[in-house]
Amino acid sequence: MDPARFYGTSVPPVDDSEDSCLSDSDSEYRPYLEPSAPTEESGSDAEDEDDVEETSTPSGRSFRWKQVTHPRSYLPQWEDSLPDPPDEPKAPIEYFRYFFDDEVLDAIAEQSNLFAIQKNANKALCLTCSQLEQFLSTTIYISIYSLPRSRMYWSHET
Image (tube, rainbow, N blue to C red; front, top):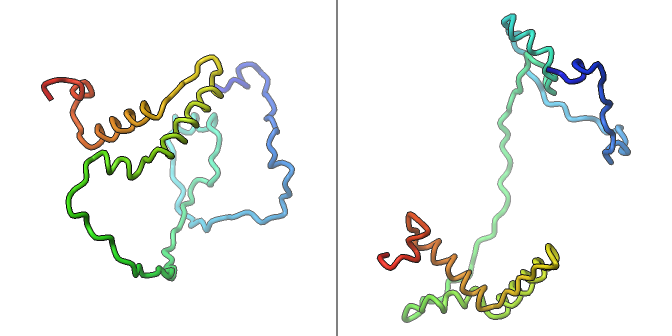
């Protein structure tokens, strides 16, 4: 049911948009619409549609899509080589330290503490680099070794 009809009043739309200041001199984009045969509607559906706001495309028309081929853009060839593989595999902590060195961990911890204070000054996070390293390590471990339930990661049997 339409509230404006029920109460006998209608509320004018609010025009707080900054777009109202823009000029309308630009031509609007109108896609090519292919006419199609009108469809017949049943009596009950036709009554309900009076309450529904009309859509932007007129009924009875459909879009006609065209396939356009675009020229391929030039992609340069990679002319470098990959580094030689290590003689022996590294420990997992060495791979972790390759991506998360002390400088990165310090920056993340500092920004996390700053964000927590900005959100709620009464509840400081006080995150240390060691805590952040443990959290990231646990998150990476859980993403690599997936178990059906999160409780199983802390179980002695698994």
